[in-house]
Structure formats: C-alpha cells, structure tokens
Image (cartoon, rainbow, N blue to C red; front, top):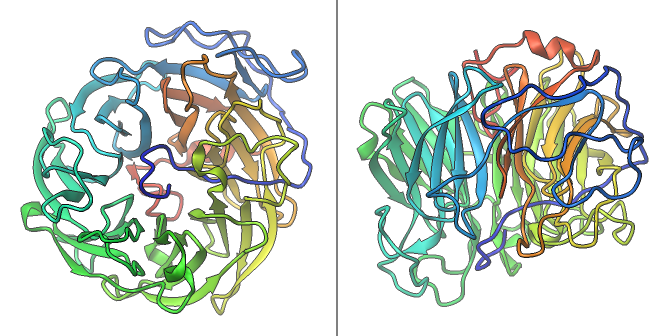
Length: 476
C-alpha cells in the first residue's frame, strides 16, 4: 500500500464470467475444534441467495472449514491486524501489526498458538529460513527495538527495515538483529545464495517521501540484504539496484516495488513495482538484471504481487485497486479495471498478457475486497492458485487456460460489524493438504479443498514454504 497510509495492502481484480464448479460434497458440518469460533456454518450461494449476513460463513461444496484460531491478547486491539504468513516444518508464522504468532499446525484440525511475540511495526510481513524469521517493518519507529513507538519520517535517526528473530525455540523466539533499509521494508523475499551459508533478502518498499532523509526521491531501487546464516547479526545491505530507472515509475507519486517473487531454480524473479511488472534475471542474486518491463495503464492501478506457474511459463500479476480499503468486487467496477492478469512467459523470456481473473461473487458496498496474497495449489499438469480477497474471502481458481481462468472453490464471510472498517483474508496459501488463511480480524482459518481436479496436490509434501520464494511444488 502507498505511504503514508499504514493499513492493509491489496490488489483488485477481474474475471471472464465463470461459474463456481464444485465437484465433491461437503460434510454436513466441519470437524469440531477447541479453536472454532462458533460462527454460522457454511452455506452455498445456491442454498441462500443474496449477500451473506454479518460474519456468516459461506463456501462452495468442495471447501470445508476445518478450524479457526481467533486473535487473542495481546493481539486483540483495534488495529492488531493479521498479515502475511510463512511455513517451516509443522509451524505457521503469521504476521500482525503488533508482532507475530507461531502456530503449531501438526494437527491442522487443532492448530495451536505456541507463542505470540509483541513487536509492533507495519506490516510485519514474514519469511522464514530454518531457525531464522525475517519480519518487514514499513513505518518509521523511534528505534529498532520492539519497545519503539511510532517515529517521524523527517527524523534521520528513525528506523525501519527488517528485524531478524531466532525461532529455534518456537515457544520463545529471540530478537537477534535488525537491518535498516531505504524507505523501510514493505515485503521481503528470500533468495538463496551460492552456498547454504548465505541467503539474500530482496526488500521491496514504496516511496519516495518528499524531504525525507531516509526515503528521498527518486526511489527507483530495491535493497538486497546479505544474511550469513550462522551469524545473522552480521546481516547488511550489499546492493541497491535501480530496477526502475528509465521505466517511468520513478516519476510516479509512489515508486519502488511492492512485492517480488523469486523462482531461483529458473533464475528468474517477477516484481510488482507499483506502476509496472518487472521480469528479472537473478542468476547472480546480488546483481538482478531487468529482462522486460510491462505496463497496463488502461486497467492496472498499483501492481501488487506476482506468482509464477510451476513450469515457469506463466506469471500472474495482481493490481492494488483501491489500496485494500475499497469495495471493488461489485457491478460498479469494470471487470477489466484492476485485475489478476495472466501472462504467458515465452522461452525467450517475454511476457505476453493472455487474460484476467476476478471472483464471480458480488460483494457488498461496504466490504473491502480486492485480490491479495496467494500461491499455487501444486496440481501436476495444471495451473491452479488459491488467493485471498479480503472480505471477498478465499478463492481457488484454475488458469491452465490462461485466456479463460475460472473459479473452482471459495470460502467467505459476510460483512463485518459496523465498528470494523477493514477485514477479510489477507493471505491464503496451500501447504501440505490444507489452505491456511490469515484473516485480518478473525485470526487463522484452516480450510480443506476436496475436488477431483486438485486431489493430486495432496500427495505433495513440503518441508517449508515462503510464497514469495517459489520452488517446484514448494520445497521438500
């Protein structure tokens, strides 16, 4: 999201008309769990026409609500919003504007929060590598400690960037280091080094801010942080490549990149850089090289995120229409304005736009709804993605036919209570047979997808997963 608004990030999206195709029957009720919230059981659109009621849960017959872990103290304040997720082993790390939570998901029907770390900073998006957790902070703080308060962007002593935690003890994560980065860190992407002893973080951040000593114009670059895995306290910025130089984005009110997805096995990365989509060669991780810049001035507002298909022959870019705060999933918004845009990626590394996707279920006039974070459902031979849509819920869609993507499953809640202005699924990712959704106000949802089309994905086991660091079928 654009500075200085410190709220949720998002991207709005489109579709060619597609009906929800649900194949497997839904059990009469989801399994009981000590973490369930007691909200209304799922209804399908056919069973109950019209918009769902306040907090009412609906889902397609092939999607089952397995469990929910609600936000609890100390993450129960008015802006203790849940954000992004990462996975390592049988743990899920979920960011929050007030810190982060470590969940034990060894039994997906009974997930448990084993620790909640208070360390405020927007957005606290996370990525994990072994025993190291990297947390992005994109608002100025008075210093780099967890006790720091909101800072002043005009003060050169203020801090924002990446915090590093040792999470070898999941019940007691330990803060070990911080790295200041230009314009902060909106998101971070792990890129492996040439040896296992080193990894790199591609740090994306918006900017510039006029008269700011820490985020001055022009802001055409990303920051690359080198992390010695055995000595994370020595992490430092080793490069600030100007990826956007000459693209036109540097002249925008908000330049820089919002999110970068790396596919190291292919030597490629795709950056959603606000005004552009950027394809990069990252065969030398410290010297990324721009291969192509694509724009969509007619339909895209702020380029938000990117996802490769497993074969590396397609890239899905999403757009942040409305900044995550607007109700854009309705008839008043053109289906081509703000979108998941599906691009083919040719053998000579050229991006060619093929089609758009948007959820086919209209949302209410007060439901913030745009396409947000998602990942592949690892179905061999097909291109299937699960994606968060804020108050539009969670959508599973097939883009094997890039020109005609279609939804195959969904889960959503009805409107929030009037006193809450922002909510819904921030991130939705597939991991080892289940979909995990970080809901801004409701906590962690666990969903099961039961469909013949996606059944082969259940055979894929991952040892860990950072959605912005793609590997063939995840990792493991």
